[in-house]
Length: 473
Image 1 (cartoon, rainbow, N blue to C red):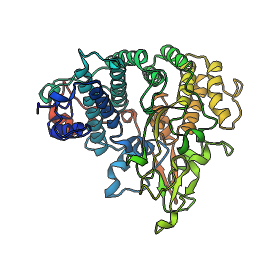
Image 2: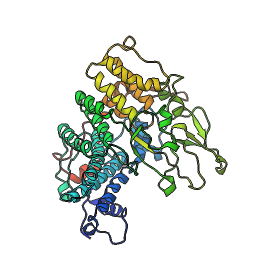
Image 3: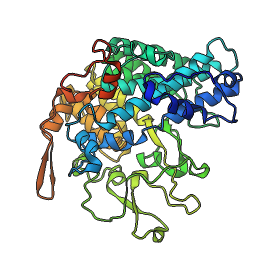
Image 4: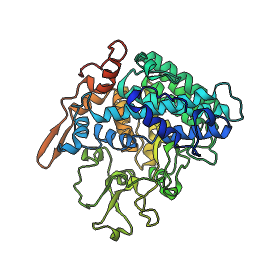
């Protein structure tokens, strides 16, 4: 078998990643030489790129909830040392969370680059669409790497482990240019509407992601333009309530733009998310701080406040409860398998990103119109210019509205950082728990990025190529 090369997961991960890549495909004699031949081969390769999105799924679902103010680790134990450090802003370059996502996301980038490299020079009807799908997924990985670590090694081709040692961290301008170029290609070549495989991305996914990229890099006029175009899409829109967007019997509805898709009926489900065997009302998570963002009549509050008892709970030694937002009933046919999807981009995000793009250009009155769309859907009164005095006040209210709308969806931490609120917010955040006060006053600007995994720095062993983020060792 011709040697496969795993980009930047480096030597220690090369063999394992190659095996995982090719076990996705049928047959016992698949090799790189005989696999990339037919259009269906490339279809399978792109499916393999999608599959890699689920690697380190818990980071989006759980770790980011603890990093933000949505959840809290109130005590440290050997089993949760990394999560506790992550939650309390004392992470270091040896933290396993950092290493896990670096390896997982670069493994995903490898899959995309490998598929794309083999598409070069080919000609078949869906070539441009498959290229766009792989490029979108690669863009998603790179964007998250950038939000997490800042500049990272950036390449669009498969490189050898030896070559990877000389790929330097990119600048912000280089990352923006790459993402913009790639996502514009995706906008031009992704289908407008979903096909039979409903989890595959369409044009609006690229528009929404590019909008978030532009906001992250302070390109607000550009964000306004691409998000305005996205809202012209006839196939997507808001569901009547946020709860409707999460109903398990109506998965991949018109509000879901890009999601990790699970199907318990083909053994591709997952375990229960945010479940408990306790009916106690004083659960630590989600935090009271998160619940305090909501008005009592906000119809989104029950999604993160209430726990639904599982039907057929008598099969357990203790009763079992699942947080309403992530509820799926136990089905005895599919033991311990449920089928919630995890949304990365929803139509509500497009609307609130538009509000952000307008506000950042000092168009606060126009921005209010968009933020009021999700507020009214939640049963809240509209905000007016008389109650929101200026851009700074609007941005604070927007952060709170996004916190309410996207609770436990992996958005809150990145929102606070992007909106410039994270440091002040956490320095003022004191959490009361059973008579003790937990303070986050130790957060500094350095914590807005995470440390590059020390094992990667040691492998490269060149500070001009891969250096540590300031403030970390």
